[in-house]
Length: 449
Image 1 (tube, rainbow, N blue to C red):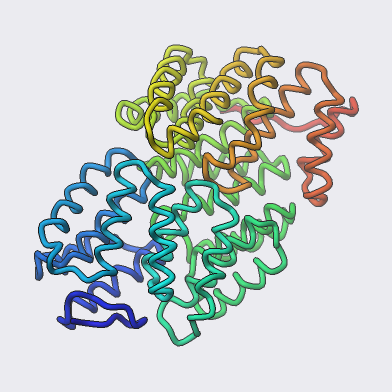
Image 2: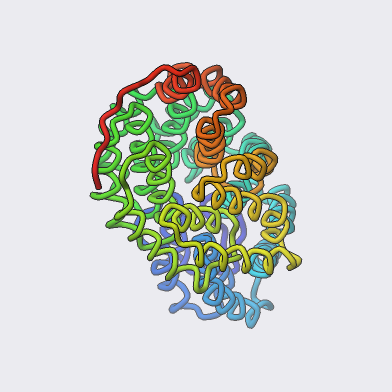
């Protein structure tokens, strides 16, 4: 049997298969090329390669779309057919895969944590756990899970810079911004192409309201991160957030038009488009035509995806609400209620926060601002369980503030705006909102669709 470059056991010793596996892992870390296509080369050479089948299943599943679950299950069945060839580590990873496709994401977390006790340098298991923590909004484990394995690593182990970038992101989500940025910079000094470190650093700047610095830094590094898969939309989204914060709505719209809409071939990208458009919609920017196109994308996706992941459902609701598509949003709520009755991790999140958020979004779009506040306010803090980052979930607070402003409840609006101006003192957006709550008119140029 073989040993990978970090000392973890593999059920193969073929050097070519091991090289292919390392390349697939490297691509997965860098969000480059297609690690599924790469690992298929190893599977074709050895059909009973259990790790290869499990790797393929998990990379597919982590795209957070139900349409990939059947393919993931197929790979799991292939792995199960050769379970007698697997070692203990591979069997444990297979158990993780089985938990995820059955909807038991919390159980998958627990199994991975035990696996990392035995194999703390298993970078694939670390990345899986990190992504699950992100999808579940588990900020503490985004940081602490990496901290628990950190003593077993050193700079000579392949993947070390990626480990640091994961740690940077976890530190950022725990509001340890100085430490997070230092860790991201360390990772980038080791690997300037580490896009996860770039994302962590960009998040730090956004959370601190360092708008001009964020724009300059992201624009300067655009040639690096635009070459990757999945991450480009996210980093373009963060760049659009900075322009939006400065009320440079034309620049934000340019990003939507030139990058996000043209690249919305997956739900992660569609989420980013929707998120920016809703922020502009809250600011009375005419984005109706763009939202109509995105709503159509959501309609096509939700034929299969509704009720699978509450984070996606909430973003779909934004598009339907903004375009006045009451029928689609009611259908979505119906499916979410059915999903909430299942025994899955997503069912719990949907019932605790997802449905209330969608109903609040619908109430806002229909002008029932008091009802929007009633639904959004208690669900706001529970929404962390829905997954994503603090910056992504900020859309809920912005909608809550806008509801209060339009209702005329300036004390409530200032209550939540104060949270923003205190924690993000450099952010122009917070002060614009505060001026509105105080009755100060700020003239902003509106941009037509």
